[in-house]
Length: 418
Image (cartoon, rainbow, N blue to C red; front, side, top):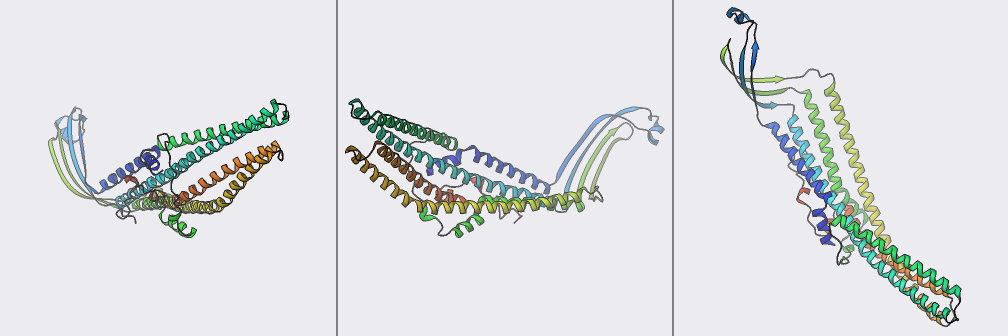
């Protein structure tokens, strides 16, 4: 199972898509950091100009169109922008955290679904065998009744009854085979290859937290879905800080070189170094509205975080309860199988000496088949619920000793938003 889960995590498009989302977020950080660096702009133009000024009138050129060429290069360095760039860098780094934890959450979810499908294939393989055994038993009974009927000893009604139960056994086998095929198709979709020689995994019960409370604490503090939602709050908070930067002045240092050439002024060269302050006194209330908008986005992200925590806790509680219930049921289901097997054997002996009817015998066979199905389902339900607990805590891959994808490593601690 470990190999199947690892292959799914490494190759499934869901994880790969989330990994590319992380790569895109990394590029967003690079873009934001560019705001700290100087900017160089080149502006060049050539064309025709008509200029009416004192100089052109003096030269008699005010009605003349002449060629003009100009080039300018400007280097500008942001000195202060109300911490807009700093906020944008923090936002992009928080996006990296969110997408990285998103990769981990996707991998954990995929791992759980792969485990579930793996166990379902194993379960259906066993139930197909059980259904085949049930069909063989019904076939033997039918053959026995048919011989009696053909010899004139048995009743026609008994043969009809045996034939109807035989048809039902055939249908049960066909249903189990179809369910097995469905499970195999799901396995291929998640893992990418057909299931071959699957082995029953060891139960991880011994590694489970001793109490539900400890499992809930681990989930609330460490589940990657919760971490991703926390990073989304940081994204919204940084966006709000960036919106507030619009209320502050902006100061830039600008170095410019301009060169022009026309018939009136001739060749001109202009060099400047300027400290420029820009301050917007009014934008029609747009800046204030933007601050309010991002403030609500912070509140929205916070509520999404609260919802995520509740969902994670619910998943852990449901899995923990399912595990406890499954363990408690296994003993009873084992008794059910043993009692049904004993009844089946006794009824077969009693039927051979005429103490039991055919209906009793067929019912005993059906009961034994249902008992085996229930016990097999209970075994795999208990096994699956244990893995669900680890998935609920965000520790399923760790329990399986599978390393998270490298894209799932967050930058928290050096992103400037903690």
